[in-house]
Amino acid sequence: MADAIRTEALTKYFGQVVALETLNLSVGPGEVYGFLGPNGSGKTTTIRILLDLVRATSGRALVDGLDCRTASVEIRRRIGYLPAEMPLYREMTGAGYLDFLAALESRPVDFSYRRKLLSRFDVSDVDLRRRLDRLSHGMKRKFGIIQALMGRPSLLILDEPTSGLDPLMIEAFAETVHELKTEGRTTIFLSSHVLSEVERLCDRVGIIRRGQLVRETSIADLRRDTPRRLRVFFDGPAPRPPASLAGAVRRSDARHWDLEWSGPLGTALDAMRGLPVSDIEIEPFKLEDYVLKIYSGTEGARD
Amino acid sequence: MILPALLGRSLARHSALVIAVAALLSAFQILDIVVAYNLQAKGVYGQFASLVPAFIQEAMGGVLVGSFSGAIALGFAHPLVMLSLSSVAIYLASEPAGEVEDGLVDLVVARPVPRSLIVTRSALVFIVGSAAIVAAMFVTSRVTVRWLSPATASALPALRLAWVAANLLAIVWCLGAAALALASHVRERTRAAGTVAIVAVFLYLLQFGAAAWTPLRPFARVSPFHYYEPMRTLLGSMSPVKDIAGLLGATAVLLGVSAVLYSKRDL
Image (cartoon, rainbow over the protein chains, first blue to last red):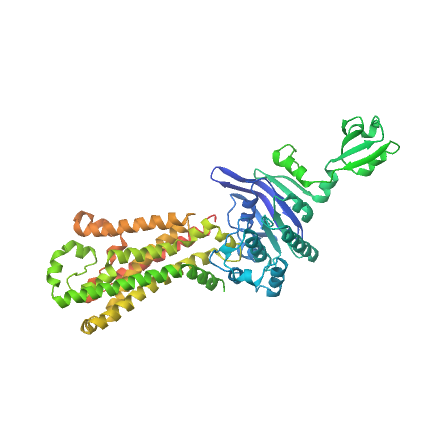
């Protein structure tokens, strides 16, 4: 089965500015893929090439095995898209906006599903009748999410989906993603700066910096491979670390050690057996720490 | 379903502008004909005509200011009428650049909407919008003339005034198509509409200047306003078919250019 998304040496220049440089990435069908990167790293350009809004300088992008350039209309039949900056026809009502965008779909929109989404995102009939320019930023965002989802696309491209949403609506969004993930019919390509959200929702992440993919990995692998920080407290003076832990101890104090441990935690705990340990603090895995290192360039680029 | 939806949205966005300009230019027809009727009733046309230099009359498409028929033609040849109508068509046609500027194109073209439909939509909007305004001007002019001077209305068949209106529309469409071509390439609406509007004023002045200064005449052929002689058309002394065909041909070429440019651009 063809990848839901595949880019091959995708390159885009805007004049002298390099937006993408030989970007190769692949997203499997049904996968939830987090596309991360600092501002200006090329995320939105990649998305816009997938939608054939901009044209690649070289290389190619494929959706379901179809070329985004030559089969763009067919590809866009399959895509639901939420842009980061929500463009609105200011004078339209919310209902008019959704109806207009539904009329541009190639297949009829399932209105019962649309009603379900409206209810889930707490959009009332009054909100539907109000002009879009009189709605709050969060409410506009809800309309954006609903318009992307309402056509039940097989590929969802979401650029900063939860920006401006309140915690309840972020939860409603997460619930929707989980539902789609369970159904397994929808691939989700999600670009976000909210790393806790990416960590929670995504199966895999790709990190792009200066137009190049610097890391592509699964969240499970990251959890396994990323060094964990532990603080071990002792009853009485801290003993000398055993040989198996010595390399991991970053700091040793009178009553505790600070460890940075890679690999299964059980091995570290086994090594502490017999020591007068009174407590252990384990810092939870945070995608943020890892990603920030890559953004700042302190983590080496790997494939 | 897609084209009607795009068309409906764009017409809804611009309907207030089209209605306002249609009302304004229709009111101008009434005012023009009422003034002409009063001048005729007082018998002062002769004096009035002698005050207007011949080159100005020629520059305004051979409009004979000193006659009631001339006044009717003036309603379709006055610089204010021609330039406001052209401005509306230019503005309507520049919508694709505005959609890129506002990001609205991201929502529309991210759906299965062929790019050619965006150009088709904008072409139809400026064609229908300007035609609606000219139709309102035509109806108002005919009704006012019939009301004030039934004899003049009988002497000037509606078909001749329709040819004048069609010729004016052909000029406006040509300028609209030029605006659409530029809007298919640039990212700002004001840049597309502003540039073509300035060029339109220049082309109008070129035609106007050529009437007064012979060396300019060969250059005036590039101006669409050169292909418009409302008074001679109204009096039945010439057929504007060739001029209209030429202007429509130029419009078709510019629409083709628009489609090609839009299909190749980054949005």
